Image (cartoon, rainbow, N blue to C red; front, side):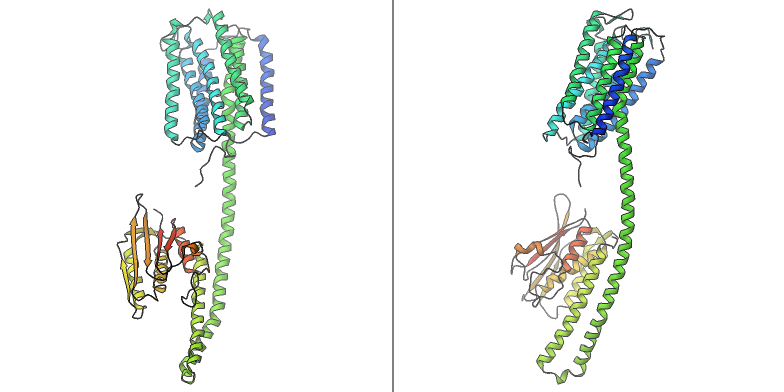
Length: 525
């Protein structure tokens, strides 16, 4: 089963960004920059205090971020690349800290905010929020570089998700405690709704950190489609900080509102392309499903034609064979006394070859049906299946000294008719290739491996074969022995292999010339 890897081209995080995608991303950045430049001169213009704007904005951010987290974790679970886990944690961080930011906003739910916040708690949470996300982006870029070198593929996916989520939420809780319980240890960032010199120093550091994250994304080449849109996100992030905390004067001015609009865009770009990607994946799956249904219909029609053709050819071949065998039989009965020994031998050759040709036709029909025949699986008691086969073969041995040893085989989930054919062919081969052994011994047994897989075997002490030619053993019409000594069509083992593989198992053999042979096979667990 093929598992996706970090080199898979079917995901947003691995699909290279083409010229069209790059032009679209640059166009979005260009439009965003244009509106940013238009808004900067008016950023300090005071606007009415719309208190409902804050919870609506925060709720929108949280919803967008959490949906993005789920979609990114879905890709991480398939690709197992840690960079995607870090990026999902980045959006989890922003979504969780946005909740704290809204709860501690002064005047929204309480004069100083909830959770024991002070008048500076929300401002410091904004700094932790907008300074923390760039750190995650830088970590994402560094991990992407390591993955490009073929490292950092996670095996314990769900454990890593749980650890990443808990660590991120722990970081958010620590930021919340610093901004609320530790508020006395931090300088004031806003006084009477206006920014202090400390605010300008801190926000400059946050903005520079965001520029570093943008540069890391920009200079890491080649860009995947996800990287291209993360660059757009970081531009919007910078415009958000610029309007909300650099070029404006305080809360509830034009910069305050416009900056948060950029913040919502920053939370939405990756979500939008992820949703579009999911839509395109579903469209491709539907197209593939439609093609599969069409191919299946064509295959069924071809199978029906092939089956009709097979039976027609079988009938056309059997008719002359029946005539040859019938006339040879008549000669044998009516005028055999007029033939000498050599003529009677030649008559036997005619009848024997006609019979062998009939067997070959039966084998070819059986082989052609295997690909079309539906499995009808059920619990099969193998000892019950083997017993009549052994009894029939014993009756056909014509006085030969053949010992059959059947161990405890248990039950298997299989198609009883096809499994009977497997055992009949293997047992028939064992009888045939022990024909020249004075005391033949044929054993049927089963052993269970450590993982619970049952391995069945049919062994004999007959002619055996050279393991150098084992790769030819299951090929159609391949024979490892002289047909004059051991009759056969060369199809039986091919049929056995095909049946075993259709049951989800495999078959192999061990042997040495003159030392007998053992055929092993498994079925689906």
